[in-house]
Length: 194
Image (cartoon, rainbow, N blue to C red; front, top):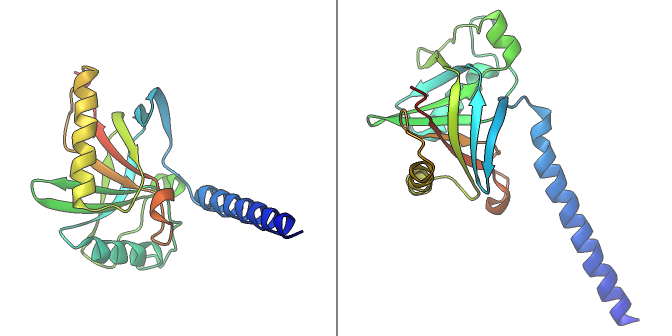
């Protein structure tokens, strides 16, 4: 009888764990995700084609400050007082020592024209359409993870005769409460198509 109880408890734990995993994985469906066309898949590597993306970004601040300023902007901290839906991914660029965090604006907001921010720190930009090499990884993101995974992607690009056209972008998909092993992070590097 004790074995039956242990087996039932183990099964309940497994089913509960799978349920939590499913909710975490499908929580992304609540918000819009930047769309792309997958051109190639090779394990954790992909080649994708993105259309242009409208961005709201903050340059030069610590990541937590940048996130707070961007979240304030989409929470009504703009000249229209308009709330804007959170989307994925959050993009981080580090070019020439200047770190920029950007939120991808929903297609509807981009089409209508994004309202100016109340803060001069938040600027609008466009990430031009193009093809990107992508490497997916899990865990918490930090500078060491970014540089190491960017090096892995550059090596894969070299092996596949894909020429980089710019610095790496970090794409983060999950809120901070998601466990490290379940987090979705990516490194993207634009492919030179000339």
